[in-house]
Length: 242
Ligand SMILES: C[S@@+](CC[C@H](N)C(=O)[O-])C[C@H]1O[C@@H](n2cnc3c(N)ncnc32)[C@H](O)[C@@H]1O
Image (cartoon, rainbow, N blue to C red; front, side, top):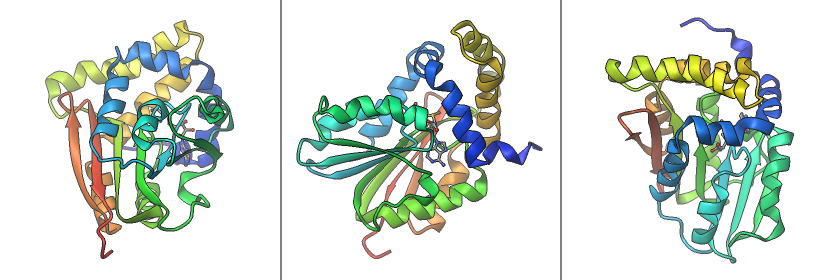
C-alpha cells in the first residue's frame, strides 16, 4: 500500500500529537466505547509486574497506563513514562506529584533513542504507540526494548488493529477512517488528524510483523488478539541468555 513516508517522520508525529493533546483523551474514550480503556487494562494484566520494579511506559501519551500500573509497582519501585510530544508529556506530568501509588517520572524523548540505561527495566509497557512507526522503526524499537530490559524482564504492547474477519473489518475500518474524524471534529479536534490515525492503523494492520521484529531482536515474543482482532498485542520477555 503506498503512503507518504513523511508520516513516520518523528517531527511530524510529534507535531500531530502536540495538536491532538487537547482532545485525544476525551475523543479516544468516547469513540472507543470504553474499549481502549479495557485493552490498556489487558495490556497491563498480561504480565507480572513485581513490587518495587522499574517499569518503563513507552509512548505514554498523557500517562493513560500510569494509574493501573502504579499500584502493582508500589512506592519502592519506579515508573518512567516516555513520550516524544512535549504537550502530551505536560499532561502526563500530572502523575509526577505523588498522587499515584509509585513514583512517576515523565521524560520527553524519542523512544527509539532514549537515554535509558542498558538493562535497567524489569518491565516495558506500551499502549497504542506502535502504529506511528514504520517497519524499520519498529525493528529499531524492538532492539531498544531488548537493550533497556534486564534479562528475564518482560514487556507488553497493545495496538488498535485491522480485524481479520472481513465482516468486522469493513464496518470497523469505516468507523475508524470516516466516523471518528467527524466525532473528533465535533469534539473540537482536527478531523484530518483523526483521519490520519485511521490511515496509520490501516498501514500497521496488526502486531504480527512487529512480533517478528521483536523475536529477531532476541526477545521471546508472542501475539495476543483482543475482541476478534480489533486490537492486538505483543507479550514476552528478554531471555536470560540473550
Ligand atoms: C495514540 S497515542 C497513545 C497514548 C497512550 N499510550 C494511550 O494509551 O492512549 C501515541 C503516543 O505515542 C507518542 N509517540 C509517537 N512516536 C513516538 C516516539 N518515537 N517516541 C516517543 N513517543 C512517541 C505520541 O506522541 C503519542 O502521545
